[in-house]
Length: 208
Image 1 (cartoon, rainbow, N blue to C red):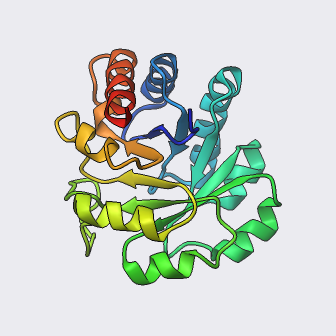
Image 2 (cartoon, rainbow, N blue to C red; image 1 turned 30 degrees about the horizontal axis):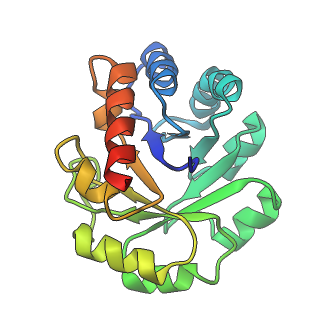
Image 3 (tube, rainbow, N blue to C red; image 1 turned 90 degrees about the vertical axis):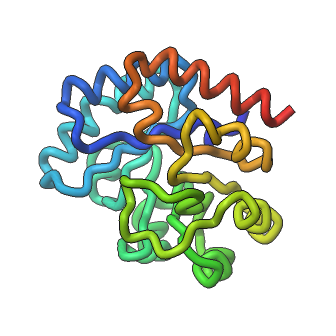
């Protein structure tokens, strides 16, 4: 199974204890990668939260990806970094991270997708597939047709993100996309473990 298959992106509004519980449960349910996203915490809080969940990820051999911050990833020994378009350029991030860390980049347009082909990254996050309240500044929604075309155009793994829920998950997975990233479907679930089990079953079933 691809490490990108069921990709948890954490909700920065979770308390530290809730974050730990969500990550523990989601991994127990089958999540294959975790991205710690912290847009508004200071760097010390970011490091504290990363250190709290890193051992859980390590024990399960699930990669921990840090959103935006190369320095935080290096400080805690995380498995990689996911960059946005306004973050450190990927070439600089790769130089700092070395060749063995995972490096992802959010892609929001066809122009960015073409540029990504020349960058030293491991995967792209295609955003947003559908409209989503967690990202209000999105200019482009790929939809299923756009996702399918992107899969043909881009040679490395793609993680689909944005507005993906239990009721449209199968349609997204059936495109053959290598990964599906989810926030609220896991972080806001009554049981993240049961949610992850159900979501993973649906993804694998839709790929058959």
